[in-house]
Image 1 (cartoon, rainbow over the protein chains, first blue to last red):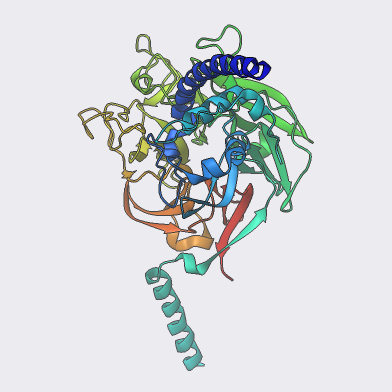
Image 2 (cartoon, rainbow over the protein chains, first blue to last red; image 1 turned 45 degrees about the horizontal axis):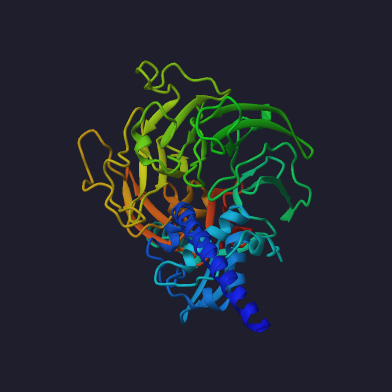
Length: 134
Length: 374
């Protein structure tokens, strides 16, 4: 019985939590879209396809799912050197965005849920704040 | 004796022929990284004592001495708006620096109380100061583009002296393309000032109702290359256009360069900006780049070290990480070639006092020297 109550409460809690997260996520995505248009679109393009061999794609990019923290790090502190995305080698440099941690969370949520990408796990400001410059 | 004379004569004429016919190519040149350790460098200026001033976009002015980066930054740079493409931008010495010591600096300036525009916005500003040790002194704030705009794109920021007593500053449209055509806003413009920041009374729109008197030309998008032809004195500028629409222009008084009424590019969200590439009253570019190269930095070559290239332009590419050598005849580009492919994201290209070419590389935080092989 106790177990059932726990499970029930857990379910209700999870449902409430989940729907809040959903709302948070969709609000964050729409803020992130504006930021994407401001700072990312010139290289990664409107459809997230990038320029093969020059600017890596974000659309269905294995890099994003394999290295979520590295991806946040790149937006926060910039990134340079050799990487491989979807089997194609890139050796370019991305400047840091200058965005606040909240904005980086927003733009990450947009990227992770656009261009055919789907990742309902919310990136939060706190998660971005925890990533420190190496 | 006669034989020697004839032989040397032949040799000399042969040398002349070869220097006229065999063009200088990348093969005859070498590149060396001479400075490293910079963080997001944007521009450089050569001091007469051999040191080099370098701006870092994050807001630091640095000194390089004998190829070593001085660990101590130069103090006195105002707070900059470091976001997207914004931050500390250009640094240029006054043409008579040896006499007056003026250093001109441009940067993205955050909105101050009483200024027009959006809260938390910014726009490009120009200041000058003198260098005393590691301190800027005699700071004078000469100009700030109005209004302030939120967002991190299109600050322009290139400074140019025309050696006639005027200083030019390029201004991007801050992501609001329609304002490039609005003469009451300092967006998407070239402005011309006296060297002390006063506005010349012979600027083209001084008497135009509701127009800003500092404007020299308009209809620009985001110009980040601005140079003067060493012989003719014409001003050449390149600008970041939309996708497929980067341009090289000859900038003249009062003219409209067309953005966004005409363009060879489409928007970065793939929408059509204009179905026109030309229209009466709107200037055509000297060339446009399709695909865009993201041009940044530029110099005319005027050096005994690169004789075959004198009068030509070298243009940096952020996107393709190379230099473009544009062969210029009159007001035309007759040929272009890529040199030093994969050199890195080029922010600035300058000819140094020693006649060699120096390139500021954003991605590796370095300065690369290009000179003839022995």
